[in-house]
Each structure stands twice: as C-alpha cells, then as structure tokens.
Length: 166
Image (cartoon, rainbow, N blue to C red; front, side, top):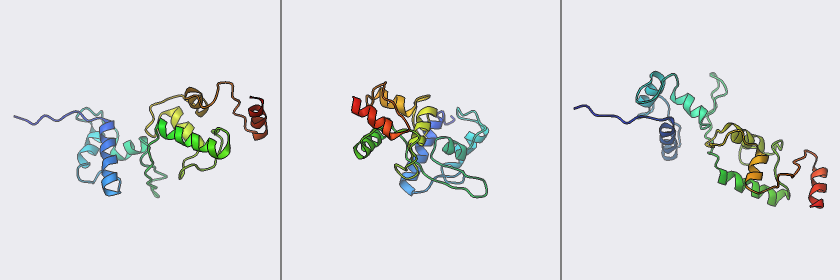
C-alpha cells in the first residue's frame, strides 16, 4: 500500500516558510531540509502544483523575499499587511499629523513601508492582502475614516481649508 500525499498549495508552502523563519530567523532555500521537495514540486510540478516556479519565486511573489539582482541578492523579510495593521497605521498617522495620509507621502512609516507601497499592496493584492484594485483613498472611505467627498489634495493648505469648512 502506497502512502497518499495531500495536494500542495502556494498558501501552504508560504505558511510553512513563515513558520520556518519564525523559528530559525532565516528564510528557507531550495537546499533547506524539508523544503527541497517543495521546491522540486514547484519547479517540476506534482502534488497539485503546476510547475514552472520555485521556492524563491514563490517567496518573492508573496512579498516575503525581495531580489535586487542575481549578483547582489537582497533578502528582506517583510511583515505581511493586514487590513487591521493598515487601519492602525492610518489612525496613528491621523493622531500625529491631524489629517489622513495620501499615497504620495514618501515619509517612511515602518521600516521601508510608505503610503505609496501600502497603496500598491492594496491595489495589486500583495504582501498578504487579498484586495485588488483598491486605492488608499477608497480603503479609507470603505472603513469610514474619510467621507467620499474628502479631497485628498497634494497641497496641505487646500486640505486644511477644506477641513475648516466641515
């Protein structure tokens, strides 16, 4: 009697990689014990995976690993974004600056995270988010942080005038 293996999913492999990182402080590679088989399934297909990928590519797509180039690899572990985390960052920003953030604000929020990067994650549905085609402004409207008619103008003087009128 053969041993039946369960089907693998990208989500399962990503969770396993996160757990490995949390316990060891290192990201798994194709040579890491327990991940070589997963990498082979991602590359060649098998156990429900179509093939044509790799462990490294999957971690890059999930926003866990970042590659600058093949010669100078830059590996960073990025915290997953959740709607709750984004909401708490928005509320902290409003407490500090007395106005909601705009995507063009380039001040770092947390490490290399900026409002522009948050908007890209919301729009493209990456870094752990499942949303797609959602701007930072639309996210704040959906969560009732701002009204739909709030002008997110690039000029603070105009925003201040608008807030004084309300």
